[in-house]
Image (cartoon, rainbow, N blue to C red):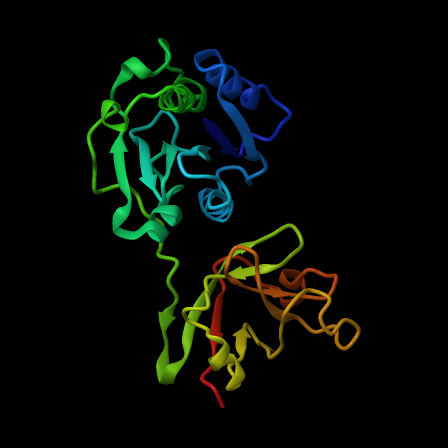
Length: 265
């Protein structure tokens, strides 16, 4: 059974090793895979996007442990989400809301309340080790989701990924992620921005800049222009990129910035 780990812990401290130790102590046959431990500290939205982009590459039945948990030790709940044929264990702070949104009505979320699956002494500062890792290990060893707690409907959701309809046929999209290369990932998918609409002349407006070119790959048309362009990224969203440069820096934009898809001319 595969168990993935996604955290904001970094690798300088013992935290990631402790998670792996707890999992392998409970189930030595588990395969533990690191998605990343470099989510910016406390950045739940970055964790949610990364988990959405990465999780679909894993087979059905995979268990994902997500720990971006600024509310650890508080009244925030611990949850188990089942969606898209996979399971997600972590804090109830929106970290799993994107994967659940993609799954739609098929998503089921449980409040983790059965303490028999936790470590004996639960630290108020390290639920990744004492709650989430042992729950994931128990799941990988055959425990059923219903054993961990009751289903719940009021789990925390981030703002929807769906773009909004604007005036006169425009679309109001948002930059939902900026990667290490400075590519600006929007929440636009091919459902909102079809090839037909692009062919009719739709453009992107971000800040005071208009992006008119949509390329097939990063080097498509290389040398023609230093201007930022749009490209369909590997996560299925439209990205704004720049030739061998940071589009975010060139355009002076950040996550949360509005991207307007103008009506076709």
